[in-house]
Amino acid sequence: MVKVRLWGSLAEMTDGRTEVEVEAGTLRELLDALARDHPGLKPQLDRGVSVSIDGRVYNDAWFTPIAPDSEVVLLRRLKGG
Image (cartoon, rainbow, N blue to C red; front, side):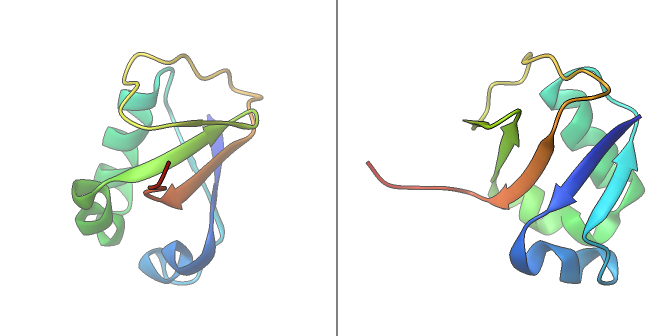
């Protein structure tokens, strides 16, 4: 299981939970599991999110591996340059 911290207002979409656990080995599996297990997150997941894995932010890097002990933080999509 991977522990996922929900940053900021994303916790409102999981009934105030700031941390959830899902079974996932890649970023794509993580997002699919979050949508399945926490349907309140699905609209934001569909709009796009950024995921920090061990301090590095990923957008759309579907096959990025996630270890069970990785630090994972879900954020609203980071934009800018």
